[in-house]
Each structure stands twice: as structure tokens, then as C-alpha cells.
Length: 132
Image (cartoon, rainbow, N blue to C red; front, side, top):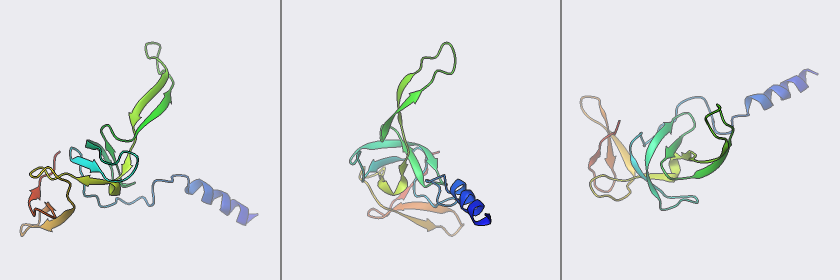
């Protein structure tokens, strides 16, 4: 009987299929960055990052991964129906666009002598500012 209870609790704990662990994942992308989708159905599309989810390692990109959601009206003035909205994509499927060259680039981090972290484009070596 005890073994059965243990199995039930395991099922409840592993429901969140997106969160691998509750710790934050290191991400090379921040809110406001211009990115290019390199894998998936929207491959080749560009967009601005609207939101970052560090616990799941996903980003919400404007105009990418549009899904249809059935929405019930929340009040008498709001209409119910099917709403199209963007869904998050994994951060490994997007590539940061270097603002100077306008081309997608891999990102590496550099720690300056004063201890501040800085993102660098791998090809150009130029720093990429964080848009907040």
C-alpha cells in the first residue's frame, strides 16, 4: 500500500513537463533582444523577445509560434472565442542578432576587470548591449 501512495505522489510531482528543475537556467538572451528562429516551424523568422522564462529556459518572441487558444469571456463586455497568441519557444532554438552587423551570431560572455559581465558576438567580437 505504501508503494502505491509513493507512485501516486510521483505522478503529481512530475506534472510540469517544461520545468526540468526549479533552478534558473543560464540564458544568452534577454528581454528586448532581436532574435532569429533557427529551428522549428517558424525557422527563418525574426522577432523581438517579449518575455524570458529562466526556470524553463524558454523565450516569448513576437510573431513566432502563434497558437490558437479557446478563451471564455471574463466579463459581460468581453467576447469569448478563439484567440491567436504567441507561445514560448526554447532559447536553444533562437539565435541573437548582432546589432552592428545585423546578422545572427553566437554569444560568449566576458568578465571585465571590474567584475561586470558582458555579451560578445563570436564572429565580430563586438559587445552586445543588454536591452532592458
